[in-house]
Amino acid sequence: MGMSVTISAAAEQDAEQILKLQYLCYQSEAELYGDYSIEPLTQTLASVRAELARGLVLVARLGDEVIASVRGSVDAEGVAHIGKLMVHPRMRSHGIGGRLLAAIEQRLEAAGTATRFELFTGGRSDRNLRLYRKHGYAPVGSRQVDERLTVVTLAKQAGDFTTAT
Image 1 (cartoon, helix red, strand yellow):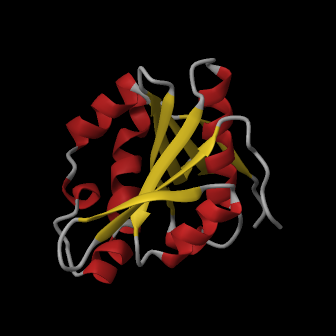
Image 2 (tube, one colour):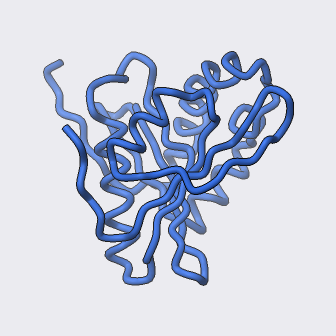
């Protein structure tokens, strides 16, 4: 590849690249569930900018290109919510998603208020479920959204950075 992937906090000027990446990455999820109206595909640039301003957003870069991203925040009860973990389709299966997940967990926990991590994915999103289980997450609930989609919530305690190989 020639260049190494770096992970850092996203900056405001990354908002447009993050939104374009999100639109590309969530096409496969939309196809899997037959629903192209999912929030990642309808989110606006202004909304992404607002998320950058109020929460922790990390990006993985290859040179100047944002090739992956993840978002996180901690609520008043100490639950760190992780969302929109995405990796450019051409960069999948290189460990970038796992690196980003570990990086956001460590940064949210280092802030001192996270006691538990939670995230969610569709019940048929096997690649996502495998990644989260590999990083210590276990299903804690599910919710039937409609006839096509069941959302699975997964969680783990803060400090559990053990990953299976």
